[in-house]
Figure 1 (cartoon, rainbow, N blue to C red):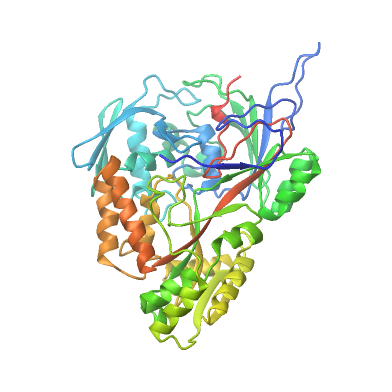
Figure 2: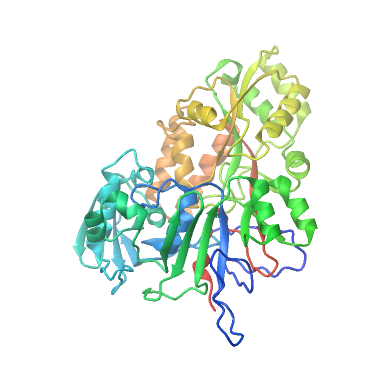
Length: 511
């Protein structure tokens, strides 16, 4: 397992992976300091980049809401700050020989905050309800599941429709609801007043304003350090940075353009760590001049990734040599790309008989990739320098995403993939399998290797990943550009290290 490499910008701050320690920072709750000089209960206010669509774990599964669910519900497994798979509600799990069946052994004596016991029945109910709605946000995580059954009160068996060695990682994203409570309340009422078995309980919910949590004194596991947590939606990078500087927020993710000013202010610390995502150029390798592998290779050779990360991105990214970030299971240091060689790019274009035909270049002008317009324009310049003509097509993120899903690109396009499971299987599904929205090549070899890695474990799985990623680079099906960093501003007294997935997890603290 590769661990996330970190680049710490705040001089003198003591950072410990996956841990937090806070004293006297701002919080979303009233100061309850008792008479006689006793310290107020510890509390923390963390910014969410957007407002979650729902507090119902059956329906909601976007990354922004997982930061809340990780504190208020249990999942069968969990992924640590450094990407390791760890027990959650399930104490252990085993598979049959061909990894098409998985048994999970649940912890005993687990109860929801209202006293309802959490058993295999609740796990089965949660998963079956999600599987019954293919339009739900969580359905994609369970595409390999054919059925789920209760073996006994503390054992659940998943029957998969194909071998899947990384399945336990997908269970880290599914929050278990108490079945009886959920059905008695109904989905809408449950979302308004959720009941879970996690280390925190909901104190109040104000959509668009804040989600206040209190420590669950009856939690079955180890008690977390903080008494109270507020998650506050703040959509603007600038507003999140200002919130930390003013003391109204304790920690918030900020954009690359805010890092230098926040760090120089002396009022907050900034920590940055490599994310789990790769920003890349997708390539319609069946369209026009891009059907020639030499032209695709020339596109890659023309781009100075190091200059983009050092200059445009101000060092808050690292060049990528494959389609999986270092923090993601399946990434390999042995995979290489073509490098930066504009002269070789010109030679290949001449060999291919390229005559200056314009290649469409689509990108989003806002949204998922910070400085996306500037990145696209920089790439345009590099391509023009070697003689490649591009037709720039900028669009808002929603329109760009729709074109990705419908596979409507006729040339190259800027995109990113960040697997929430910190495992390479999810991106491989999109990039290399027949139904994948980024798979224009439809190469049987990539499909074969993508499927192969699911049925093997250990070194054999790593080898399948490496072969596929190297083959993809050699064929020029994608151009991996860079791995961006997650940057967070935090109160000076807060000991904080970003997770690769950008989520919050305050449950790993201890008093």
